[in-house]
Length: 180
Image (tube, rainbow, N blue to C red; front, top):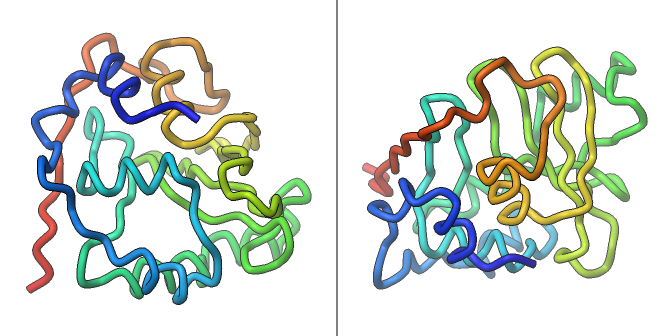
């Protein structure tokens, strides 16, 4: 598993959004609501950063402190994935909480979704699965942080993404943790 600092090295535009003291996500509440633990690289990313939007295209989800159960329940109730599954448009992938089911952790503004394929006892072994906006499915044997570092470091190519992804000079916006 790559560390968050390795992602920061290839995508330095995220660093202004780092929360120095950490975000204090209640992982026990989130994982109780979701029904599973999550990969350690994602936990590190979510502790360091709020929701990130890269190039006004890719939104990396992050649980909001104080609203962890909402993030967890959303992972169990992915209606879009459920609809795709019921239509037979998932190439054998299944929604979580089915064994080996998918949990979303990022999405693109063009309709692509980024998942983990659960199933391994150790969440750190879960691969990343991408459903591109054109309906293509691709699987990558890496975690979320390594996947992002590979995409923005240009060592991972994601089929089904629009031309110009990733951009040559990605801009990043961090979204507030406020839950008014």
